[in-house]
Image (cartoon, rainbow, N blue to C red; front, side, top):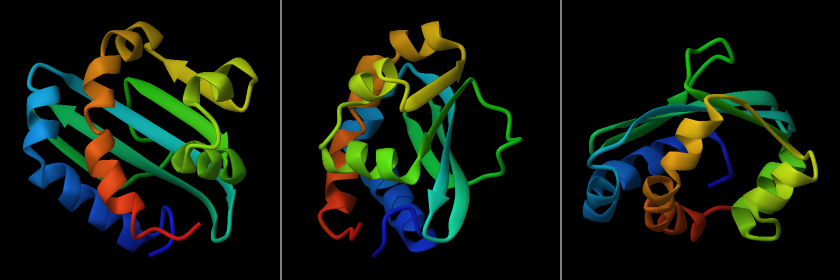
Length: 129
């Protein structure tokens, strides 16, 4: 399945929802994270990751969706981050990843967000870029 396609979002949502590790990592976390990606093969897109005390979901969402933090990047940068070719921190410090909103909240929830990686890895294994 293609990266960030509707099918990819469904697969990621299912992997996040089924993961005991994700539930454990986010058991005390509440966060709405909007990802905006421009210049993709099908145009611009955005999706929302919601974390609510152990329940994590992802769905397509408009760029106007209320969020605690918004991450904005180009398609190329999103692919580089997703494939591990570029660390998110490096993308941020070089201006390739723009962060808006409650950056302190994002910082305090870094460990919880790192706990999502197993679900992302599961979907990544069947993703084409």
